[in-house]
Image (cartoon, rainbow, N blue to C red):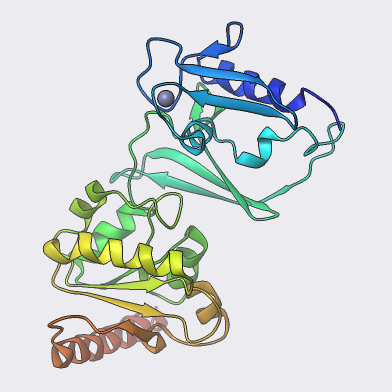
Length: 277
Ligand SMILES: [Zn+2]
């Protein structure tokens, strides 16, 4: 193991973020800090950090585009890359202008970055946070399509691949923000596909609570195969084959069925239309 490499990594990330370390202190990237509230130092196994204003370590790491694993000295050996970037997802504003990007890595891990002056700047920084594929989401709402809210970007792509309209919030389960709800205003029907674990179900309930007041209706469903929407679709099940995860209080079942039947008919005629060209 290379003692100090994690600390060097942390120093560099802070410098790149515009908060260079002086001695063992830096301005905290996770809050509006004017007092160099962040202490960084060498610990027994790697770098240690502490925000004296009260930010959690993972909030500080998130602002820097780092994960807890980056704080350990033994993670990367002599420049050999211990991961592979398997996908890059672009979050854009309502006009399609890129706001920030998410790198999906193997082994599974995610990093956010912006492009500043043509270079990668790790973390979301001050970029606006919006739902994934926002322009498609807004077009789907205008077209009265069913909106699928899934847990991750991979699931969004899986739903889109079979003709649905889907979105997710940045950084997965537990990171929903109430401000995202405004983008769903006037959505006719929202189907939240919960990942089949406690964190996923909790996230789905949080999203449902947030979206119920601004939409025509919300239901929570789960995959019939695998853990998430991508697994379900990869196994050959359709968008209309998710199983209800929770009875929706006061849901108008007949209306939901009628709505879906209408939607399927619309999808069929759309496919027939494109087939004729
Ligand atoms: Zn802080």
